[in-house]
Amino acid sequence: MTKPSLILVVEDNEANQLLARAVLELEGYEVRIAASGPEVFDELRECVPDLILMDIQLPGQDGLTVTRVLKADPATSAIPVVALTAHAMTGDRQQALNAGCAGYISKPIDTRTFGFEVRQFVAAGNGDGTRVTAQ
Ligand code: MN
Image (cartoon, rainbow, N blue to C red; front, side):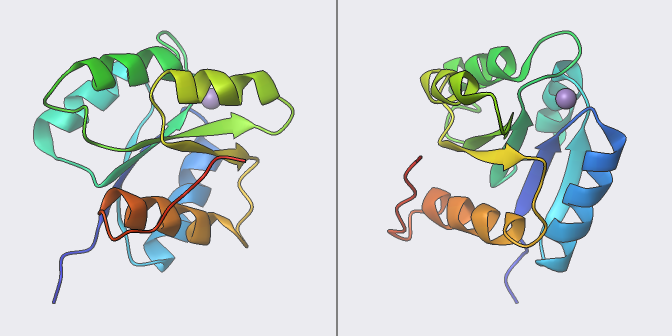
């Protein structure tokens, strides 16, 4: 049996934390949650996720800042980061890519597509040839 992929969900909103966890666990992923930048760095001392889902709007350090720190550190730079961006905030998307994100997923989370979108990014991060392009 292969080990389930581990997803680190960075999200400060409790309802979104619960929703993301529910969908991803149904998809068979192991899920850890961080609610702020410092919690992300705490988690990364204990685990190496296959993918990080990064809310952009966090209290304190925002998600883009946290992503830049992760991408600048050789210990964490290889972990794919996917931004969670609010629908209307199209400017956020380019900024997310500029910060080093592999792509983005729109919020609010659509439970019909979220699992599929995450699976594409996990597959791309595992180097199986699946290409994910930001739209
Ligand atoms: Mn938020």
